[in-house]
Length: 369
Image 1: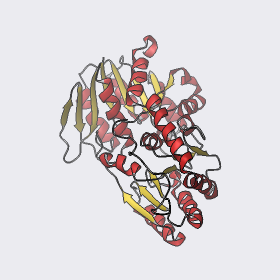
Image 2 (image 1 turned 135 degrees about the vertical axis):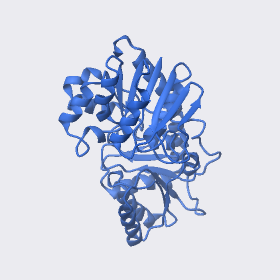
Image 3 (image 1 turned 180 degrees about the vertical axis):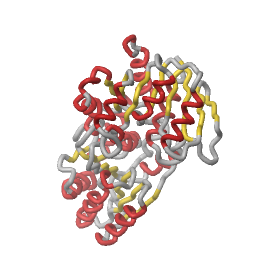
Image 4 (image 1 turned 90 degrees about the vertical axis):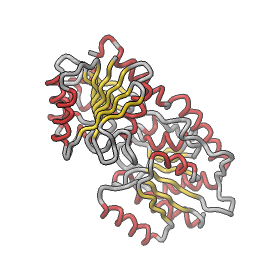
């Protein structure tokens, strides 16, 4: 098959920093291209060529100051070419324009969250109209699949889900990793993700303050950027008022993320809103670090409480997170056991090969059109 993947308009593929959607596109394409030809259309940015080739993957980058300009350039680029399947990532609004150019080609919308099928990004009516023109709607978790089926019952027969993956060679445990401070070095809590309210960073900061009362050496390291400098300023002010040691790492490049994960004693994902999948959890688990996360969205599909990590049911409570963090800090053998099991489970279930294989089956199915 020749598969066309249309990426969102914001970040180039592959992304220099951040860009989890673009990162997923690139990793999936690399695996699918072992058997199929893949063309990716992505945003053109400075220092990126207009065209790149990697084996059976061709990446074409087009300019676009906004969604409409980008989409217009995408259509101009692909018009007149033939593809066996078209995948549009996280932009249901693109389907109408693409369908006009490819009236008979199977189109899939790969959704990475609820953001672009919900207000304020769109209305339920508009989202239903956009999705109705696709042959397949694919969510990145069972949780997102179920949400799609409940919200858009008329197209529920089109909905599938495919879990995301991780590069198991890149994200790997540190050798002879220590899991407790042993009274000699700080106990380091890690967070990675966008600095936005729904990620729950204030809850984690307040939890860190509670942990400090029992473990004075605790440190919090935060990796991630924000589109709103005012929110980062707020977080820094909160850290100062709480008098907790927080290190803001800013945007961390993809190549540096594995070492970031290996630098900590535990990873915490305190999401306050629906987390469709939570790729950072899989990356942390693959890196051999015990993981604590909110029990919401697709996270329980990855983390099984007390088996390969810890889930927090009362995830709006700093005390609830603090309790779990102290459990790991005070019981190094438990932390090590959870981390070891996490690595094993991720290896079995969440490789990019597994993601690509399931997606390939969906596209190869007779009823995929």
